[in-house]
Image (cartoon, rainbow, N blue to C red; front, side, top):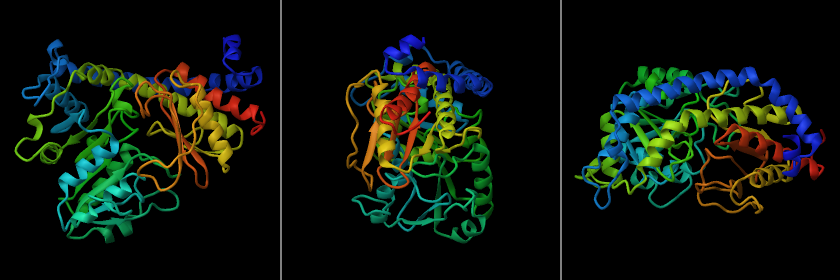
Length: 424
């Protein structure tokens, strides 16, 4: 194996350094596999209980009337997330689209949106209207309020209570850290926050941005009081096979509102052809618990390597995990870029190209992204990205197999070592 890795650009010195670390992590990995076993059973049971059949894999074209496979898949998602209904569609193009859809369909002019967990992910700033953009919630008369987390990452309950008023219609809770260095929220913590909010105003809709968090724990935010969970199918629940799509699962009224916004008033969930991609949706969902576990093991491996080299990592090398993202703060742009070069060089697709920072739509600074993926932009596949701004943190996630994630992390270290940016 060592000889094979040397032929793929991993020096003996880098291999030996990493070898000691991954062998020490087996007890952590065993616990991750236990969670994966439970979630695999949960997904399988949902498919069996909902009586998924071979006919469900066929799909429709045109209007998509009576698409049995599409409707059954939404039934399966509702069963997994323990919700009244779900909307799972290829017409939802990405996670930001899914979140925008959930927000815009359940908010009306004069309503207020509250984020009790600080600043949302960069691309949502234009959806909300924090940064002016055509078609934003602000343009439709929806106001926005924000309460930052406390310095220790806890909830500022005092100011959250003050922020809730008669116009507060919906609370958005971002589970993952996004491009921030704050803790990812566990389902239990989210449940505590929701219980507090509901105790102050019981009719508030609590929506959780569940991106990167599905199948990391044995419970989901909807098990602890969330009215809606929202995510992308080219992240955890797509299992690396879904080529596009997003989902919203939750209360029936919330899902109906989203369906009418996605298609048209009067049409709702009745239209929207599945266009022959249902096999990838079903099989990707079936594989998702195991793929998520592989990505989690890779994140822990990365944290242990880079923490041992003196870099700040979040979560740290020993913390419990609640999403698949690993943040590493390098402090210098050349280290951030070199890490991404390593991830790209380790990819099965486009491994020969060099990632460059660029002005991505929806972001307020240049971003570098590395992902030689089978599905463009898929972040359940081995990928890394980060904004070219202080403190120059990289956000690493994904990996369909543990073997590939392991090699990818080693390759990042190899690139840095070759450039004399780190010493082993």
